[in-house]
Image 1 (cartoon, rainbow, N blue to C red):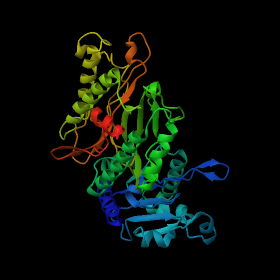
Image 2: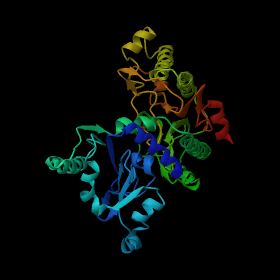
Image 3: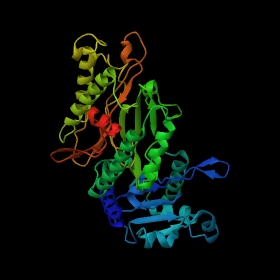
Length: 434
């Protein structure tokens, strides 16, 4: 992502904030894993989206109309001794020269300067409620302004969560973001193809996970968007199974839900395929039902349609299929209204996708499911999870299937970003046989 793109995003936010507002956004903190070992640091998505600044503990201020500069960045100063241990810091010099802040200060000056930046702004925007300690610090600055009202200070009168503006902006992806998400999806799709070639009875779930991680890292995507799921047999009926420690057995299916993160942007793909390379008749019957539900849902992922329409399309196909298989009895509409499908399909058909795998953005507006617009990216991921109960015929028990793609809404329909990962059962079998 270029500095020009970050600048474009900041200008859009500054316009939305308005001349009487001020926005404050903190970076992520480093988190201790154990003793003096940290978890790998990942910058907060909102902070990355607006600044591209990769370091922890920083704070960005956005001040529309400020003559000295509208983008102020507080960050750690250069420190040769700490940089010897932990790596390069941009410092206040790099904050302006590299990351194009209009003004930069060391974090040690934060408490002294923030009340002056807040003074005179009627509205203050920050991530209210996300971090109690940060809330307290912000209101400490506000109270310093309030203490000087008799001297002419003007404290904010309105407090707004910054997500109200920023997350709506993030929901609609720009051209640069779409390019990154295409690349991320292609890397992950190639990884899924590799697992289909690698898979055979006796291999471990962990082997498939490791190969996927290796492939993504070699392709330039070192980090995953979420912990991979590699679930063989009945373990695929556990929606967020992440143990990935069992051996894959002949005659089972394996469900792989895995997607890389590329330069801060997520992919999210699920494929289900036979461990031995051939679907059994019951497996194929259920698989083709889920695939038909997914295709019906993708057909509804178009501009102007409401968010719920892909889910409703998938539910209709799945419920009719469950009736045909003798698992449900009754009228389709009544069974959907009564949620009779819930023992076998208990999640929604998708979610927003972007910098976060479950990305930001409301699903409803003023009580109505929102309409899809060009630039929005969502997953489409119906599934069936068949428990070992008397209600399920024995040949179907313990089968878990999910098929998930990343779908970009375009002006005239949609683009399946993850299309390079095979999902037609004959294509899967042919690839595995090769």
